[in-house]
Image (cartoon, rainbow, N blue to C red; front, side, top):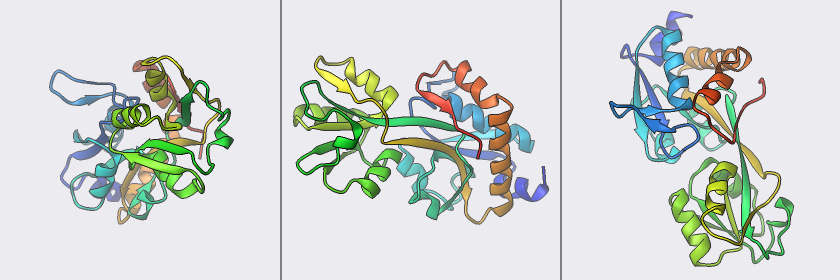
Length: 241
């Protein structure tokens, strides 16, 4: 481990890790002291251990808020979805885990597959500024995106306004489908959200260290072990870069 990477990633002598609390797959609970627990906090703690420094969690309510603080000396590493818009300010490792994003429709819907969603007259409820929302903004050409703040609010909007489609992460949609009869999750995915570790663009040595750490963590079985430890369904180890 080189000193330059340590100086860039832990300039205060502590690794400040930005954690997105809204991702219920990666943050599954709280410790007795109130710290976030789950795959992402554990990953940050492992990175801190590799650097030889303690970790301090900097929690955010959404990935968008975490991304907004890039390069502002609020966090040293951020654990969020790696998206092109965010990559303008953040140097990301390759993904360490992937989460399938797909659609839910009412049972009698004429929409039978993921490929049939992007049509005129189709309204898609989605949690604004989530990684999969950023993908939809870049890729949906004919359907209308109805962007709502937060996962629960997107579900409520879909139900109350009788929208044609709800976009979400498959594990979240599995919870939603259980709330009301007459809903169906489509097979397949429109994208897989790539959860990665990022740092400020200026941290060249730090970014190289994180890239190497993530590849080793996937190969050694560490990431699989963290998923198993927290018993998370719907999360898989990302392929090697």
